[in-house]
Length: 567
Image (tube, rainbow, N blue to C red; front, side):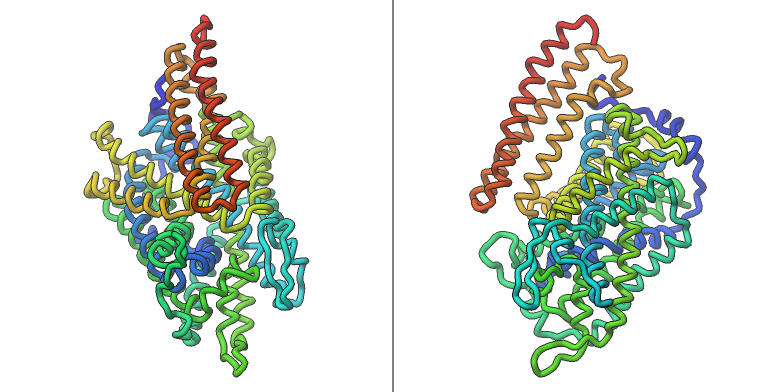
C-alpha cells in the first residue's frame, strides 16, 4: 500500500447507497444562497468580532471581513469541484481519501477536529458570555469566577479584579448538546428555518437600529496606528484580524457539499457560493461598522465583554448624558437578541459536534481510528461512545482554555484545510483529468493558487503561539497514524513489508519536518515574547520527544518489521 492509495469511488457509493445514494436534484441557485447564509451567519460574527476589533483592527475590522471573504471565495470554488466529483454527501476527509490518498485524507481529517470540536468550544465560550448578560437583565448572577477560564480575568465596576476558575455554563451547553446527539434527536427543517430567520433578523435589527446611534468619534481613527508590535493595529493588525474573523465564515462549505442535489450545478454552484459570501460579507461589513460606531472598539476587549460584543454594543445604543454615561434606549432589544443568539448558538454547537462525530466515524470505519468511534448505540443507532469522548474533550477546552485561543485555533485549522483543498484541485486536474465533474473550478491553476496565497497569508498573520499549537496538534496526529492508522487501515490489510516500511519512513520524515518547523517557530516566538515561558517549554519538550519518537520508528521499528516473516 502507498501512503497515497485512493479509496475507490465505487466503494464509497456502495457504503452509502442505503442512506444517501440517489439524492434528488432539487436545489436552485437561490436555494443554495439561502443555505449558505443560514450556515455562515452566527457564531463567529456574534463572538470573536469584538476581540478582533479591540485587539487588532479597531474600526478597520470591516476591511478584515473583506479580506477573509476573498480567501473564502477562492477556496469555495475549489471546494465545489472537490465535492461534485464524488456523488456522496460527506466531508473533505471523504473527498480527499478518494482523490488525494490516505495520508492527505488523514491530515485533513485530523485537522477538521480544529474546525468542529475546537470550534464548538469557541461557540460554547461565547454562549456562556451571552448567558451572563441575560442573567444580568433579570437581576440574576453566578459568581464571575464560574464564567471564565483560569487564564481569564475581569475588572468589575468597583475596580475589583476577578480571576476565573472554570467556564461552567460552557460545559453545561456542551454536555446538553452531546446528550441530545447521543439520543439521535434531529432538528426538523422548520426549527432550522426559524433559527436561520432569527440569526438574520438579529443582524438586520442590529444594523437598522444601531445606525441612529453611531458616534463619529468612535470611528476615528478608522485604522488605529500600530502599537509597535506586529499584528496590533495598523495594516498588520487588519490582516491578523482577517485571519481571526475568518471563523465567522466557517460553514459556507455546506453549500459545496450539496452539489449532487443541485439542478444545473455548473451554473448554480458558483452563484450559490459567491452569492452567499457576497450577501454575508455586506451584512458583516455593515454589522462591524455599526458595532464599532456605537461603542468604542476598546470596550470590547475587557471587563468580561470579549465574547459578547453584540450585548456590549446594544448597551451603548441610547442618549449620552452630561456625565458621559449612555442610557440604553432599547433594553428589551438586548434581552430579545441575547435569547435569539443563545438559541442559535445551541444549534451551531449541535451541528459542530455532529460534524465531528461523523468525520471520526468515517475514519474509524476506514480503520484509521479505533473502533470505539464507529460503535453504534444499540437503541439510538448513534456513535454514542464517540459523542461521550468528545463531550469530555470539548468540555475541557471550553472550561479551561480562553475563547480567544480556541477561536484562533479554529481559524488556523480551517485555513489549513482550505489550502489543502486548493492544492487538491491542482493535483486532481493532473492525475484525474477525465473524471466526471458536476462543476469545474474556473481558471485553474490561477484560482487555486490565489486561494492558497490568500489563506496562507492570513495564517502567517496569526500569532505565533497559534502556530505552535497547530504544529503540536498535527504532530499528535502523526503519532496516532504511525502507531495505529498505518497498521489498521482497511486498505493496508494486504500490505507487504516493503509497503509498510515505506509508509513509516515517509510519515516519520514528515514528522521530523514538523519538528524542525516547530523549533523555528518556537525560537521566533521566544524572541518576540520571552515572557511566555510555559508555552515555550511545552514546545521544546514536544519537539525533543518527537524527534526521538520519529527516529525510533525510522530505525528500530523498521528493523523489527524487516525481521518479521509476515507484516
